[in-house]
Length: 414
Ligand code: NIG
Ligand code: FE
Image (tube, rainbow, N blue to C red; front, side, top):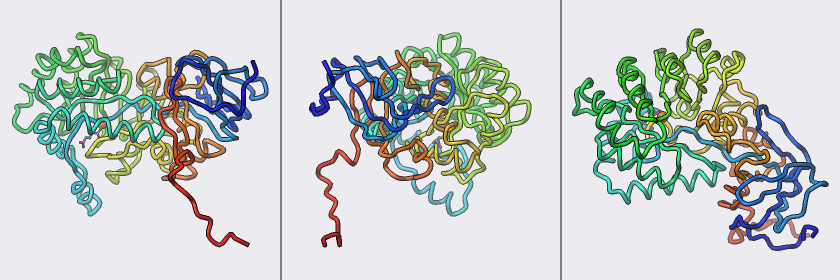
């Protein structure tokens, strides 16, 4: 039966087939960045079933007319710290007035988290995840790391698991003020890990001066790997250090920040299997030098882009902002930045079912209110997310779908 163009769309379910038609520009983001023009995508169940030229599109039960807009994969935000309470806007304001960023502010949030109820923490995560959907993110990784006791880390992970399978145990975020560094490291690598591992897919350590040194980081990460967790590392954020080399040595899926890199760090990343995840919102919000993405890409390193949404170093959940910063400040082309925020994020999470618009992948798609994906960097700060599909279900419809907003055309009457 031919597609009925006038049929009313009920895209809040995925037990019917759905054709997204008249796509002006389709960013596929497979192994390389490719674009199809005048394209269509067929979704069956929660998967992409067909991708091709609009004129050859198969019939479907339901139909969305993209009307020449661009469609991109849903963003894969592979790094966030959403389980927190409290507000650190004063710390941000102080930084903008000239005070440097130090990891010390983390302790402020730890104090607030320990005193927050489960409901308060879960409500905050829900609010932030909603904001992420509204900005095109369809997969998010969420870390613990603001509890730093066995019970508080465990409940942070339980709460995170209510929102995503990509949960990361970050007991090794900082040494809490009340603890001795070596005793705390043994706790993180021992009883805390044992309690948290059932609720986590990944383990992460902040390997940086002021947090955990290389031996402490290695002890935590090797114990986590032995407990069956995949590895991630916060490294080389505030200065040169051993984080990148350690991550590659241990086969971590990703090393994140990578702001200060030596030639040896770049060579290790190029030879290894670890994705370099760049978080330019942190440099923006801490007024720090940006990582040199062009240098990484020239060496053949796989680069991901993520938000690092957290209350301290970057309280932005906007992947479009990260793309704009990567293009404007880090030497990436728009194509490289978009690939890194989708397919690159999927690789940083070792996922092959998301991050690209190809047959068999999960139907995570974003319709932009723009004719080209280039607008993501060209129009920074503008709400360009028109519709967000996750697993074939429409999770978000943007401004053009809001009937309550009425635009009055002033001075246009004859
Ligand atoms: O990724 N680097 C360490 N952790 C976070 C910062 C958390 C905070 O400041 O609260 C980050 O930047
Ligand atoms: Fe982080």
